[in-house]
View 1 (cartoon, helix red, strand yellow):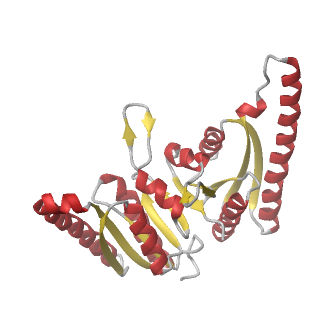
View 2: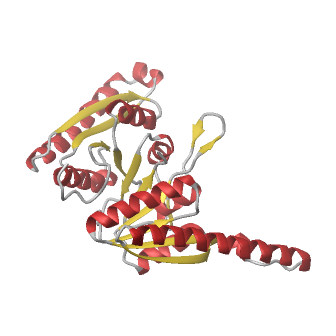
View 3: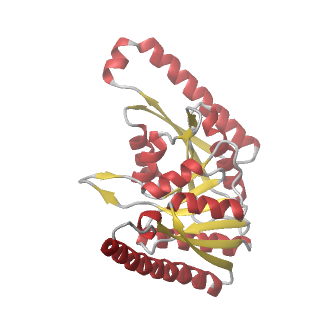
Length: 297
């Protein structure tokens, strides 16, 4: 890794890509980061299939494999033109995210870079299930790059709620800000359903008391991250807002012209299934800039 690498944990990058426009931003930025940081880069694509499909439509499967390999060869050539060595990996099977996660574990990847799916309908943005599940199960941080985004490191927004997952995000954000002499904005949000009073007197009193407590906690969390950043020599400021967390984070990101948003991933839910937190997922869905989902070490 070179001393001008703008982002931490880039020794071994895994680019999860598909032959669609939604991967373009991830491809471009993965190559750029690998070049700047001297990273080892591996590009992986997964052909979604199952035994029934393989037996009934072998010709279609063969065509899909050719398209995927052609796509990866193109990625490899683009990397080569930038002086970046890129290995490629092709897998076939159900649940694409499992192959991406397994490849990341096998490669001991320090970061996964991938795209975000686009619009569904006219107003609703959705994220591809592969991206969502990969983030939930990944052994490392995941950088999600919208197709038209360029990962920047001058204005960084980090969300905190005091959890171990957001502590990981704060650590990543402070490290990146310090490396790039970037401005860091810390935000903590008190959810609207806590902050909003009800029409019932007793319930209103209890709700207001809870809202006050949550506001104090949020202020403490934001202050802790800001002070840690300032101690590291980072120009940092903190905000506490009430409302829908993801919407508030995006409001701050827009106001600060953020070129990177850092959030923590969610923990375990159910017996053996990891899901990313709903706030992190909605931030990715709404964001026009890259989002780094940090993993708790």
